[in-house]
Image (tube, rainbow, N blue to C red; front, side, top):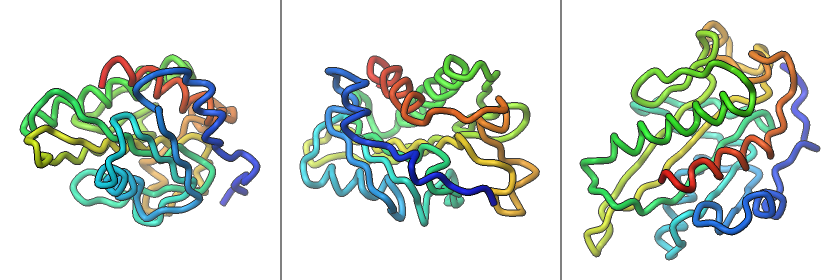
Length: 200
């Protein structure tokens, strides 16, 4: 397993400064460890957090994927985060939101790395035949009847093949594996949130 670099930490003030004014990322929280960032985003929603609240975890111990699958989240090696959204749509339209977010992730990866990222519907992003990212949208209807969503996004950024469990090594990949170079996580995070802002 490669040595995770705890010096490569995400810093909320640095992300906020890179984003400037905007709806997405108006509040950013970074935690060292969480079971799932989606859980933290739902807790924030219940406290009355505004749309655009973002929470990152440097490590997830029970990250969720589609169909109840577990998402592996190597510490300091990827981007594991959730965004609180209140889009003008109904709960039954949530698959549209999943598709939109997968488009945003794939486009950002292409722009920032030059990798030919493709989407395997509904929510997985692949590069060179390996899964590098995924999106999980969880939606609820609020008391006032409006739709509230938490969009969880996971991107494998700087892992080597040894960072993945043995059973995933044939199918999982990272942006560093595809490009042959380490990727600046903070720059990728800022680019992704900027691209998300006008779309979500």
